[in-house]
Length: 134
Ligand code: ZN
Image (cartoon, rainbow, N blue to C red; front, top):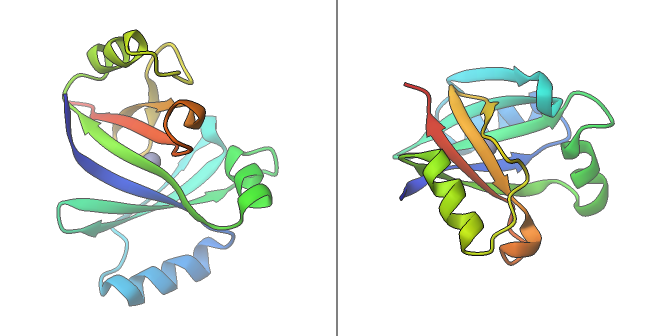
């Protein structure tokens, strides 16, 4: 079951500038920074009520984020939905015909198991499923 929008992922060119801008915009500093080696990104998290903003910067030109920015520019990169049981949700969505980008959940930032859905099967929106690791 999908519980809520957990965060919006925003692709940025320069984390230092983006952190300054979003701190000013949201009126609160980030509460966490984390590098995710497997995705070749560094991330910065801001709380916004019940949800979060995740800034994502490429750490390597081969990073999917570098490719995204080269193609589309900076901006909203993905929508992350929190789910109660990621494996069950992946199975259900697969059966419904959605295309998943991995067969198994991966370890993401912010203490989460994650899986992405291919934007081709979701109206061009990169969807992330995430479940808190308990
Ligand atoms: Zn995310």
